[in-house]
Image 1 (spheres, helix red, strand yellow):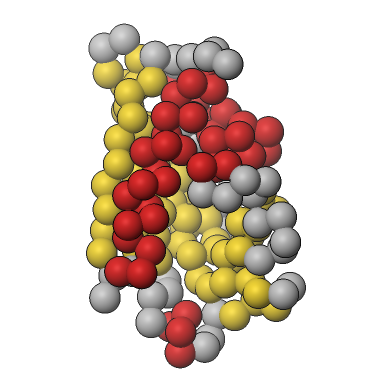
Image 2 (tube, one colour):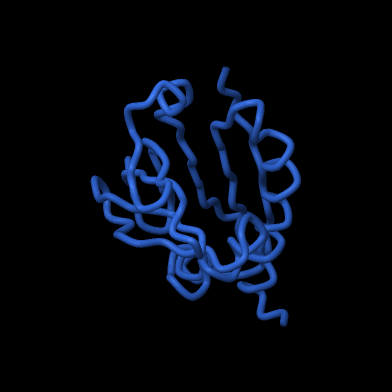
Length: 148
């Protein structure tokens, strides 16, 4: 059964900078290292575009950008996984959780902005997400605030 987790991080930086650091290839690879060192993406963040999130070995997730409102909100609709170069969107294992959404909302607050994440997950990944997501968001914060 899917569960939605919520994470937030306050960042003292302009919304546009945070957006660009979060979704740009170089910044993305830095802040997502908390999930998997060397992870990257292939594809586009444009609404309706296909995007893949990949570990160094090529395994990962396949998704579509469900929504992209510049500097406000991005929604990722995860559709399946990639194993040994093969996309799986139809197996029983994948259909048990897909589609799953990963939504990011950007809000202005005094002194900066707030990133709010709503993430669908399944029990086997819940503990990992609860541990890794705060670390990843702390990395994003440091990246945007100019810390080493």
